[in-house]
Length: 393
Ligand SMILES: Cc1cc2nc3c(=O)[nH]c(=O)nc-3n(C[C@H](O)[C@H](O)[C@H](O)COP(=O)(O)OP(=O)(O)OC[C@H]3O[C@@H](n4cnc5c(N)ncnc54)[C@H](O)[C@@H]3O)c2cc1C
Image (cartoon, rainbow, N blue to C red; front, side):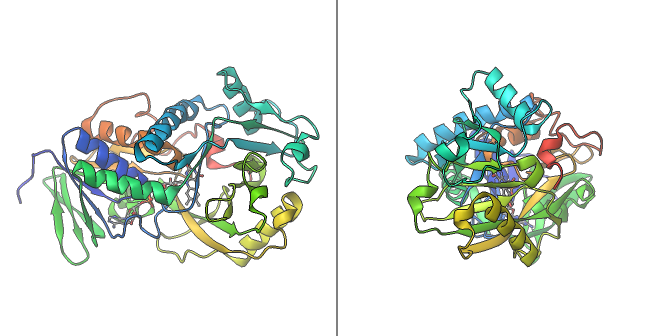
């Protein structure tokens, strides 16, 4: 078998990690083929949903705060380039049922962001109901509003990135579900699909989200799929569910995991849970369990009563590709030439879309950057930020 040494890259997976890597590598002069079972966006991909939160609030973890500041600049550039706003800077309302104290996710985020000069608005007692009337409970006694945050239309973003990839000359092959990587003399040189079709390249970049460990099984002890429920409602009084009175929000995130979004252009209000979730296989049925809906209903009865009696418009199980420590995995395989893995979104990577491609391309080229060490190919070890791996359920 001939090993290509011609600047070709095969990207496996056309989610946010794969698409941004393909575009950046193309800009750096590589000849890029991207393969995905398709269609793109894939219906089961994590990068395919109505919304994803974009926020710099990461507790005391300045690492992600700084990276997200760069990403937010990138979202504004994408909005300008695409001539439409797929990133909506509607802010982020973080509510807490306990007084914010040093060491908590809420207080640490507040201190770090205000220390950087961001004009966060601290909620005064009783102010929640005045400014954000749907939160009619007095359960949340503390919190703040961060105006430099918002949400992104995930499926639309992925669709625009696909167009960008094609426009930059990336060749997109759909109908290709890789079952195995091809190797020669210790070097990864391509992938083979179930029907026996082979694609070859000098570099293979695996960005297959929760399916990554099908292709790189030795990583299965360090990343795995975790199912998280999403619930969609369609209230009739839509204006009540729009900013500024109903911005993107997190309600007791470290203790409950609940967060959500304002009504989108289709009138859909989404509520989801960022908690320990349920470990599953990548091809699990994407349906929520009765007990998960009950859990959501308990939350809204207590906190957002206007939705309490509304039937569900829809629900689904979405899969995080969780790494053991919650940090992304953007790195060359130290043991095998020709292989780069870019995945491990751990439930919080979409917001970083505008910076992910550069990180993956740097990994392929062996260029160190301030993020490469944390996203490196690594053994199990110390967790650097508990709050990204959720705290108590
Ligand atoms: C419920 C939920 C809520 C989230 N909320 C947020 C949020 O609010 N903010 C945020 O920043 N992030 C959030 N995330 C995380 C974010 O969406 C993901 O980290 C990110 O979208 C993962 O992108 P990906 O490219 O790794 O994977 P995916 O988008 O899943 O893409 C993987 C691609 O690989 C393809 N593929 C599969 N198998 C193969 C194969 N064998 N060969 C080739 N290709 C293959 C798939 O078809 C797919 O297109 C959330 C995730 C979920 C699930």
